[in-house]
Image (cartoon, rainbow, N blue to C red; front, side, top):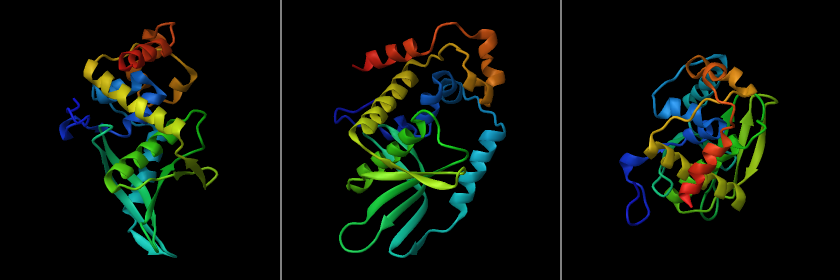
Amino acid sequence: MKSPENMYDEDDLLPLSGLQHLMFCPRQWALIHLEGIWAENRLTAEGRHLHERVHELDSETRNGVKTVRGLLLRSLRLGLTGQADVVEFTTGEGTAVPFPVEYKRGRPKPDRCDEVQLCAQALCLEEMLGVPIPGGALFYGQPRRRHEVEFDETLRGETEKLAAAMHEMFNVGVTPPAVYEKKCDNCSLYTWCLPKNTGESQKVAPYMDRVYDDLD
């Protein structure tokens, strides 16, 4: 719950990674973060190994850029806590400008869940360090190059609204109904969710619309 200063208490912080889960599927988010259900498949295992390899590397400074790995993040304003894969600080005259880099297996996704997660990291860093962060990057395993992301007002607003929706859903404590979509086939929680057996014909969008309406 937020304090009168519009800040969350330390005990109320939610995992930043949950934003990506929520944007992918509200039911998946609830199964993980409300019911404590987790299972791995090949895709999640590859992603976990990638993050572990990145975090195992030492921080370094090269060509005027200090690279910090596994930096812990927090935002009392958004009620988020997490860890950045890499944050690059350009050194030299003036204040070092942070540049968050998130590593992802596979290819860029059709939605903006990766961009939202990266933007949330930037918002945490801005609050922690008191400096504006205009952009960052996503590094995908295929095609093994960076995809730069601008933290514009639209992306920032989407990220902040999703963080508020996540807290609202956590406070309500209700797992949304299952709704089968093609993307369900690659979900590691498929056997717990059983969207084809228990799912409803209605889309999940109306459910999320009600959550967002409660925030207005």
